[in-house]
Amino acid sequence: MSETPVTFDFDRSKLARTYDVERLQREALHAVQPFPTYINYHVIPLTAAGARNHEVTDFTNPDWTDWIELPVLKECRYIQEILDSFECRKTNIRLMRLEPGGLLQEHTDPQLNLDFRNQIRLHVPIFTSDEVEFMLNDRRVPLQQGELWYLKLSDPHWVRNHGQSERIQLSIDVVWNEWIEKLILEGEKS
Image 1 (cartoon, one colour):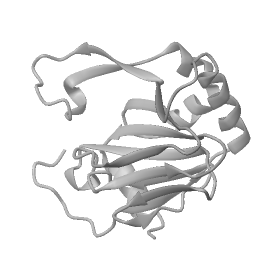
Image 2 (tube, helix red, strand yellow):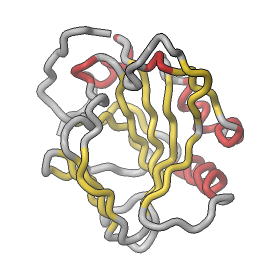
Image 3 (cartoon, one colour):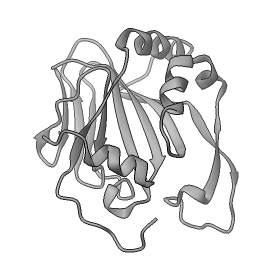
Image 4 (tube, helix red, strand yellow):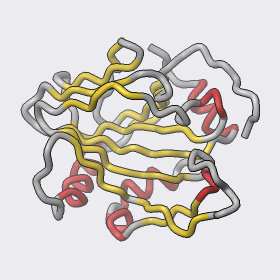
């Protein structure tokens, strides 16, 4: 990890990987099925913080805890296969749900930025439509089901679901290394 930020001149990159949407959707529906009805926004963890490393006081440091796979992730074999294909360490992995008509207010996630060469969040839309707006720096991100994206989430972003069905996205936090940086840099910038 770099102490001095590097400055990249993009805030999004569609990576050169796509995934089987039907398999993702089957596993996502299985994972969300036990959860009750929710209002607006719901997060289903697939990993959880384990033992805390008390020598690390900054929670943005990926070494502040050991991340453990939850039983639901072990049941999602295709998602596990996707994760295993990444040649970097994974930390916080979740399914992010947004109900029809739901709004995730504009916010920033200051630590999730390739420039810091620390932690990076990747996204795989599982259920989405053209009626879902994902805005980053006041520009729409054209997320499509089964695609893999890096987004610079330290910048302002928000999501609104204008559609009639829920939006579910796989959120994968990874620890920076040269492999993931190369994958992001080779991606399609829009």
